[in-house]
Image (cartoon, rainbow over all chains, first blue to last red; front, side, top):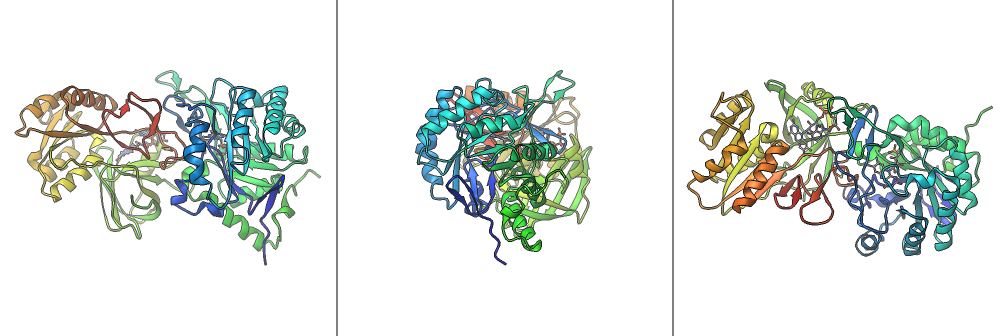
Length: 303
Length: 259
Ligand SMILES: Cc1cc2nc3c(=O)[nH]c(=O)nc-3n(C[C@H](O)[C@H](O)[C@H](O)COP(=O)(O)OP(=O)(O)OC[C@H]3O[C@@H](n4cnc5c(N)ncnc54)[C@H](O)[C@@H]3O)c2cc1C
Ligand SMILES: Cc1cc2nc3c(=O)[nH]c(=O)nc-3n(C[C@H](O)[C@H](O)[C@H](O)COP(=O)(O)O)c2cc1C
Ligand code: FES
């Protein structure tokens, strides 16, 4: 049986619905030494900022039960470096390259989108990073800022615009709706949950940046529920993300309403995770006689 | 650089060699045995999600399809690895990072503090095989069985230092280093160091003051071990920005990083 794994965001075609989450896959170059990343539906880059950012002080990583807290602080070399040094190397990947962007101001988001226009397959707008003082999650926690950022980016690019949402808010479905109304072609759900961990002998946070973002299997039920709530409220595709470790986690996200998924921290415990999950999803559909992934998207709802 | 692979390996031997320190030998199918001293492996403890992350361990010795690591119990993950028995399976990712490159024209002085010996042991074995002259300054809190093992393997080349004077000189490795170097009959030396943060700092400062090249192997919290998460960054010295310990290191030139 031929299984149809393909899907779309706006006009952009994806050969399969498995992507890699921003900040967990670099720019794909290093993992491409381990497996052929062109087999994936797409990769999402580490978030790119206008200026180079050194990131937060160490320790940036602390393990948590079934997950991890990170406080990287958007370390990256800035947009010019991305365009000059990184993009030429990753353009040739035979898969969708999605650039994640993070601004300190609405205007910066616009400038980033403008510079990336026509250079990548799509843009993921990160308005959900919990580890920066300026911008980041504060945009995604406020309806009117969300609208301003998304409208700005929309005006500056013809590329598909994906908005990455924070779960650190009471009603994520409202922010999702606002993104859709402002011109988003899709939303990704979720970025990390804000949290921290205390060293009881030093009487201080274990993280150099004080607080961090929780990811991994620990957040999966929360992320899954957020996807379900949002998916039934909007018409554009939802990209599900949060604690996806294997194919059955991925299938749960599809059934909750995600059209695509992002594999994040799972790559740390297994660099082949995204490919393994893709193969598992395909195998599941074959075994269950499901011809197209679209058949199961959002299939689970309350009676 | 060798291709990074995730080896589904089997424990061949696990021996308690000192209080809380285990020597684990593993069978890595298809591993070609090629690695640089200073490179490390990321070890997945089991199939469950807790502990979630892999743990980094230096390569102590390796050859075709074989790998040895030294594991000191300091927390949950290391304890679980230490409890692995013969025939237990583990995923081992590597070899990772950039190791030591030895300057063949100068005398190698290896400075190790406690468990910092692991990558330097590998280096020393290589120097021994190549019939190169070298010295080791080995500092530890108190005379341990590991030290005895070093004595057996490297003999006279080891200069022992203990905090309590129970073996060798009563001092610390970094304090003992200057006069040790002064007493060496060689004009040019290069220092290769691994150990606690404070020790490395002192060794770097000493080397810079005397114009002696120093290479250090660093430890930092790691999630991926392959350069994609940016969790293990260290500050560049004198320049803006960061380097990753897992990909650009763990071995750095002393004047390259701010520690
Ligand atoms: C490149 C490198 C090589 C190493 N080589 C060796 C070796 O040969 N032998 C050995 O015994 N130990 C070595 N270590 C240290 C070893 O990785 C830690 O002792 C181990 O990860 C502790 O895990 P835990 O769960 O027992 O401790 P916990 O404190 O419970 O660990 C919690 C978290 O902190 C991290 N962590 C704790 N201590 C360290 C540390 N010192 N460095 C980095 N991360 C740490 C753990 O990986 C884990 O994510 C090395 C570390 C690095 C970075
Ligand atoms: C180390 C690390 C770095 C991250 N960096 C970014 C980033 O730069 N931009 C972003 O939008 N999300 C970032 N994230 C969030 C992930 O993309 C993802 O949304 C989150 O980890 C939840 O998915 P997971 O549980 O599968 O990891 C990062 C996550 C981790 C663990
Ligand atoms: S541990 Fe991920 S970049 Fe070094």
